[in-house]
Length: 368
Image 1: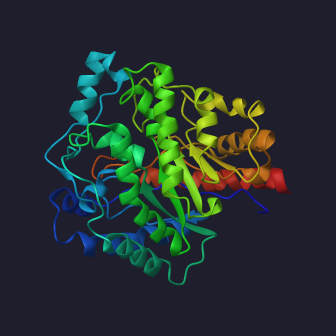
Image 2 (image 1 turned 135 degrees about the vertical axis):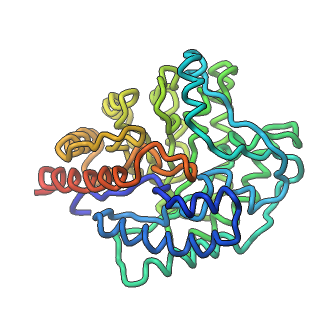
């Protein structure tokens, strides 16, 4: 690395036509998704991003897509309620009225792999879109066992350990398939941070810590055969424009995150609740072989960050963990749920261009 590389969190805006087809589970989804992946890969490369992916175009969300690939899911469940929003009842009502997303299923039977070909179709589509293009790197996302358990609640196992272990076993096929193609596997793990504000809100802090340590252990077991340098993980406190005053501090979970096998950690570092936490890395030693992918762009506001601000944010991290250990990222996805984007699509792309320009400025300063 002779410069600061740029990437994003995984999901990118989908067209209204594709979002509608995903909601309706239309047979047109594969055709529309193939075209969308072609377009989104081209636009990432044209924008100047270094580490690109398929934008999760063919998935209705970054988590509940697994219900189509695994057995044991059905019925209609509920997403966990965020405690920070619940404290502001009028705000919560307005928020829910303006955010529509398909309800998740529940776990109602044994979890196992159902559709082996789904991940291979994803890989084939992405490889076709990359034809003739040579980005610095390519990644593909997959939901972690703990995150799946957070959104798809258990009504069968009656034991959280057994449930996440079953999810890990079922998802391990997809994890290996992505890595076997030579892509970097990004494991989406919002449960490790965001879970404290909803799924684990009623637990003592010690019990919450035990829960996320379990999730990390299960994740490590599920990826045991994949080299750490081919793994990265994303952790966040919830991709929504809300108070976030109940977010667990990064300080309280950073040791658990660093125990995970992935060699790079993507996390929020640009929004007003977590931007200050860059200073924590003055105290926390980054283990050898680990890299940080801090968010330099906020994914919940339509402000387009100035490139100079992006460069300043990059510079802070480079000063405390070393310039070669920093990749410039985004706080969270721009299309975590199809058809429910917070950021206007064209503004999302403008923000990504600003990320690239900011990284260029930072690279001039840090590398000469």
